[in-house]
Amino acid sequence: MSNERGNWGSSVGFVLAAAGSAIGLGNLWKFPYLAGKNGGGAFVIVYLSLIVILGFSLMLGEMAIGRRGKSDAFGSYNNIKKGWGFIGIFGILCCFIIYSYYVVIAGWIVKYIGMFIRGGLTEDPVTTFGNFISSGTSPIIYSFVIVVVTALIVLKGVSGGIEKASKIMMPILFVFMLIIVARSVTLPNAMEGIKYFLKPDFSQITPAVVIAALGQVFFSLSLGMGAMITYGSYLPKDTNLVKSALCIPVLDTLIALLAGLAILPAVFSFGLEPTAGPGLIFITLPKVFASMPMGNLFGIIFFVLVLFAALTSTISLLEVVVSFVVDQMKLDRKKATILVSGLIAAFAIPNSHSFGPLAELKVFFGLNFFDFLGYLTDNILLPMGGLLLCVFVGFIWDKEDIKREITNDGEVAFPFFSVWMIGVKYLGIQLLALILLQAVGVVGS
Ligand code: PHE
Image (cartoon, rainbow, N blue to C red; front, side):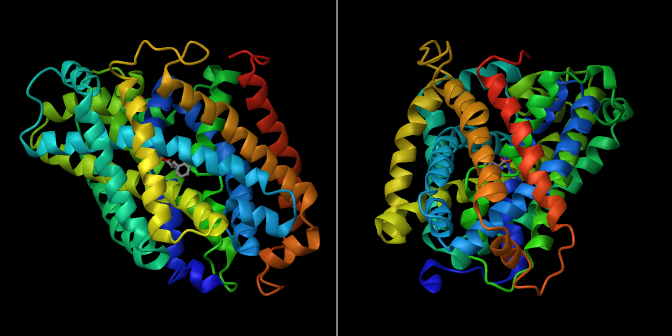
């Protein structure tokens, strides 16, 4: 059975694929602009604390559920405890929705690579960006490119597709990242940006900053939506889960910090504003590249690295849904991949149009389609999925059984089991309840 479902070829392959899922637009597009908007170092310090408190614990919980349940996100919960598969359904739904808007931003990246290859900006970056994203068909075609490339990789299966692609893209991503950071921190006045990014001003820490950082921890680590359950389900019984669950948050955080160091010093060096929000890498950064010697080359390197990060994440978003269709609806991988990708392509259209013809169409809460889906996933589905994950690990799943799964039947030492359990039970639940309260407007921001 497990062979039909596929297996990772090696532990390194698994760690690269899981880190690939975690490292994505969340690190390169969202983290720097959230830090820029939420007080720089203040946001970073809260984010790091939450990663330490929650990141490892929930990562370990999800991987253990997957390896024990040996199925997709729904099936794994259900195999461990009948009737609890609904938690996985939240995750699968969440991945589908995130994927449908993630491809739109990933498509913009492809466009920008093309632009830098052809010689860079031809007009003011605000105009270039605004005209492009609102232009109707063109951004949709770019998002379809992402849907097709992702599908081609997922079609090839776990070790032949996902693992192989991650083993190629992840090392290139790391090297390209180092090149960009080296360039950015050696620009004149870069120190100002480094200080803004790394020096915490504690007075800037507000409930809103904490909540923004918390949502970002879940999004960035791909937690609370079954991605690590699905990837964990392809793990052999002798993999050291504790080590893997440590490695992935470390790599993810390293890349988020490097992304901040790649972007913010460059932005400060050219006297630009770090608080631009989502346009930071599409508007502010191209301005930086345009004023820098060999800027087009650095532009290509930067956007290729963002593309690779995005692709290793879209692969995992698709895989969560495909594995559900394969395991529960008994379709073969090829049919499942084509079916899900087709649906995603259809959903990508209103998402992309939210920046153009449908910008003013308010779907819910005064938000357009794209913003509404972002709100739904970040503020409702993700915290729900995370909260239920904590409840499941902390209260439902038999303690001895969890212990056996995590320690490989006593082979791997994990002396912190009880501390970990307390962490999952109480901290997780409290923090997540906080986001939910905020989402329904009880805690103000
Ligand atoms: N973690 C990814 C990122 O930072 C996004 C993602 C979320 C991927 C959920 C898979 C599942 O971009």
